[in-house]
Amino acid sequence: MIKTSAYATPSPTSPLAPFTIDRREPGKHDVLIDILYCGVCHSDIHQARDEWGGAIYPMVPGHEIIGTILRIGSEVSRWHIGDTVGVGCFVDSCRQCESCEAGEEQYCLHGASFTYNSREQDGKTPTYGGYSTQITVDESYVVRIPAGIPLERAAPLLCAGITTYSPLRHFGVNRHDKIAIVGLGGLGHMAVKLGKALGAEVTVLSHSPNKRDDAIRLGADNFIVTRDLEVFTQHAGRFSFILDTVSAQHDYNAYLSLLSRGGTMVLVGLPEPTPLSAWPLVMGGRRLAGSLIGGIRETQEMLDFCAEHGIAADVEVIPIQKINDAYDRALKNDVHYRFVIDVASLK
Image (cartoon, rainbow, N blue to C red; front, side, top):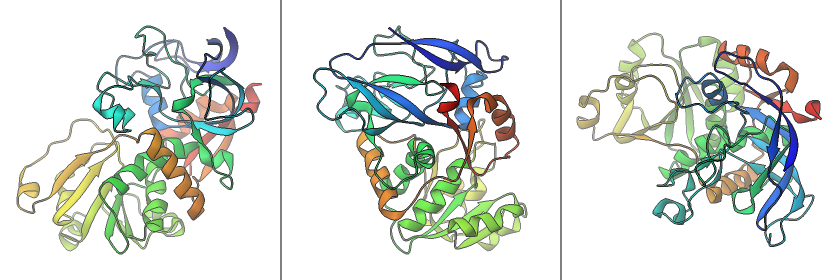
């Protein structure tokens, strides 16, 4: 086993602190990655504090991992020592079910092995994430980071990037489509950039009027403040597609009214249960859908798309010793728009 420095939390009420974990020696198809950067996702906070239930402690969060390959297994064919690579939200899956065979490993019918707070495919071994100096991963669950994307700004693409790219592509957002992004946070700011790169007319819907300037700077064509309920009447039927990135409870029915006939609203946030009426769906032939992340193939496609279009996340780089402060600030929305850990601070 490889002794690895990390930051972990031992309980839902404890701060993250230095910890040592064991990484496995690379097997025949494994690569050992020297971690350079790791993004801080809001879901890290939810899971570290067991807000979704079923947490496994001690927990090492982090699923937006950028690094270079240090060692490779004897039968690794996809990678070479020194390659710059990424690891996203999962590190394995059954590889045999319909979802895995379709390249949608995130929906593995037998349960994907997520990068942390999960179990390996043996159902026993806990997984530990990227708040650490190294990670061992099967070569099939690693993606290439294209040249041209600053590495610290590439890290959030492995969650926030693919979480927003996947539904935009899956539901066929195209040039000149009128789309709306609900919320302008870690997910929303990536959705604006990606939507514009796809050629859509992008409107940000936000409860916070002070985000207008940032929305326009990021590429939004329009900005609508949703505090005034009259805007839902004024803009009824305006959008063919809405991507809802908000994890706080809000009225889905109001936002559905903004869809045109046959339009689609996709949820990528995970708020508390929210009442839903059939009326706005049935009366407009509208759809309400959900989306998780993307498979390995689509994640690579997203990274290549971002490199081609000069897209990267807006980040604030921190040493790992400030991770607990970063969690507190994230809960206050005091970040534009993603914290990224410089893992050199742990070495």
